[in-house]
Length: 239
Image (cartoon, rainbow, N blue to C red):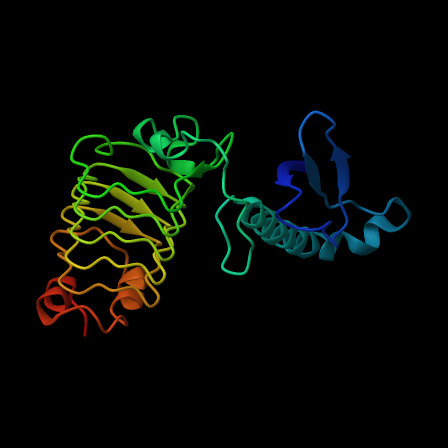
């Protein structure tokens, strides 16, 4: 029998309907679900089921694997499209936190507290954002126009409605970022890892996609954006 411990935030989902054992934590506002997977023989009729036991076990393992994958997906801290954002931080230094970055979460998007950069203004910043880790950052309404964001790590960030006009994202890791309705006119993605990110209704006019590392499925999605110019579509290989 195998057990898979998964920790959830109470704000992320309600109590799951599948069979599991829930252990509530009093120190943190979260709970842990232990998903148990097992395949057993019935002692009363072992001989009668020996011929069918293997496929039953196999199906049980497949079902458990699917359940575990679903559980891990739901535990992800990435902001869903229909999920309410947390209240705007009242920390007077919250915008300056971008100059430090998310030093705990790094690329996996896990954090001790949200990096709230909403409505902050980093226009033409040429030194403070370069190479920073902004995983799971909340960037809605923020302005990064003309900023140097080379080598940044933005994993699972929420940048809906933000402005990145002319931003240099060269050598950056842009992973699973929601750029919906953002303005990226003239942004540079040179030698940039651009995986799992979405650009629904985003402005990609004159964006530079030079040596961009992007998967086939992600490429198909980004090519649907009609604001990409002919040169950009040619570089990307859009059909």
